[in-house]
Length: 87
Figure 1 (cartoon, rainbow, N blue to C red):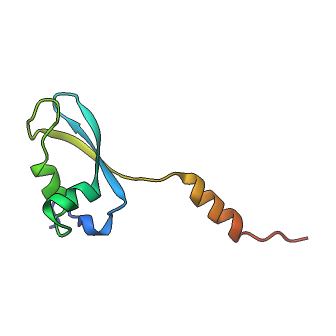
Figure 2 (figure 1 turned 60 degrees about the vertical axis):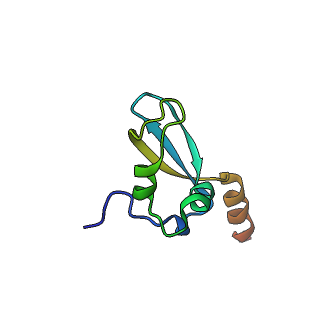
């Protein structure tokens, strides 16, 4: 069975983890920063277990999201360029 957060960070280096602590503090952590500290073979679940809240300094991450750093504008522009119009 795959542990919670089994995704390796090496697969998502341009992403960030949006974390919410049990104390209510929340915010993003860049995946590249985690990779720089613990290497690219660490999984999301392992990183969550090691990270501390910058407000209360505990390791009580209540929830997390993997988010892509970048806007949808680039994706929309790419789709626009790939479309062809028929007359």
